[in-house]
Image (tube, helix red, strand yellow):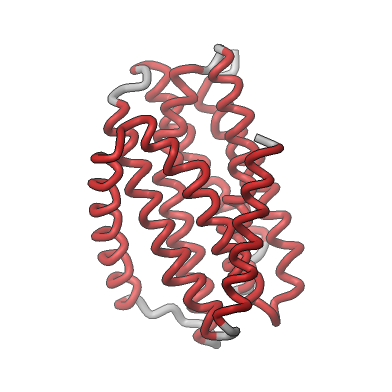
Length: 241
């Protein structure tokens, strides 16, 4: 019998890889990256408000949501200060921004994937577990898009695609292993982890991605494309998941 952790990691890798493939196709319009970034910001915010936040509220309630938001903001500020002290040597500020956004999103989504893995590991083999597994693949496609778009725009290629796919899938594997042997654990703790990750992702979307899009385009255009991204993720989650 194939181990639960392997099934979870493999499902996550499939979704992330598909999203990375779509991001690779979009990099051809690099000159208009403000359009891509506005769309990505809309996709991210759509994922947060339509999928991740309701999921965390169901697990831990509103109080844990607000506690997670507070901790997430503090963590984002700390990570942001750390990045300001790190010199990323590229030939342009634009590439620096792409790299920072991609790395921050990868860290945040990897954190979020751990409790998802726990839920999968504790339910795999049941109808709920099979549903979570299917959702995991489809859910990771837009996550792959938003992670790899800035990295590909910065000039990274196949090796980065493979490396970051592994980095994002490992927390799913670890979480699945924990969930398989220890069960769902404490829902409030899982909700707190999700809320922290959601907050960091939101801060990256607004400050790093949407803010950069506005600098290179008008706020009206950026908002319109952002809304378009939100609508796309709404339709995706409504009709495919």
